[in-house]
Image (cartoon, rainbow, N blue to C red; front, side, top):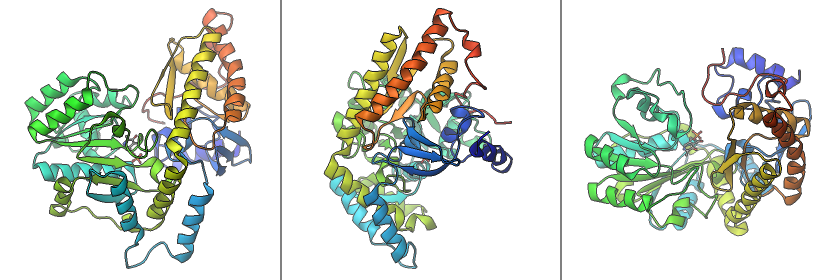
Length: 435
Ligand SMILES: Cc1ncc(COP(=O)(O)O)c(C=O)c1O
């Protein structure tokens, strides 16, 4: 057992759930064998606690580092800020410069509030939008964080959030009187949204612009028109999709403008900064309620975001990572076809995933992580591209993956027993208790 696995066993005693983020739990990749902790990261390379080096062909910090880990320019700006002071009784000027920059990127918007996590930005946006619309009820489509307002949807009578990222999210601890205040609708199902809006006095619609599939039949245009007709605040959550397809929101591609949008993840390239950007008519409602937090005023986040936005604009990073993602998607499909395997690839190219269309899908996913780890890759069945990923990285990744697909193919033909290929337990696929 490596140092990381040992430390994780200790963590499970000290930290309920083992880590602060479900997606980084070792059980989501390779129970008992995942290296779990890093000592160093740079570009798209990660070193574990024993100094073993891995090429990160998986979630890249769960999409935080589109310019690679430890980007020299971003780090230099942050180090300068650290040396000059991260905090003081006075506010940092960078938050105003960043606000101006975000207005330049979003000419339809007038104002912005900053936070440090995506869940916070979502909670802020919901508070402001509820205050602006003077209505409590919200329709949602997508994953919008862990806060009470969102999780309360699972009080409505079932696992309503199952279709929106993860099954099995328990609303325990969320007040039951929030029941029937948040109503999930399925992507591309306009009739369902219309029904919810007509039945539940909806004041806010919040959605991811796209995740696994694109809009069909003018879905986004119809949602916009409905929001206009019923005086509903329309919010796009671009915490994950932002700056991966355009210089800003993916909504720009579809010519639909929201009333508010949240950005996170990519915007600070690994440093914590999230933004709620919106029209003055809505954003000013922030002054009629109380939204305030000490560490939303620290200086590293806006410093990192300003520098990151400058680099992205200069390098057109969204084009680079999209091109890499397209190669990845093509590579998976080609390799599957060579081995006669049935897979479904989805997601925008720079944040993409695939699944095996077999009963043993979870075993195969775990097998990929197990075998690729031996060959020096952090890999699963999803991929977040960064500008540090090169064609040479993709080539070595596919050479290694070829052997694993070979084993999977033999499992499907019956030559190899799928129940015997794993050296440990199968990975978790949804939310599970660890004990
Ligand atoms: C669309 C979207 N919104 C909100 C969040 C929550 O962000 P955080 O994990 O920073 O709280 C995520 C995280 O994956 C996300 O993808």
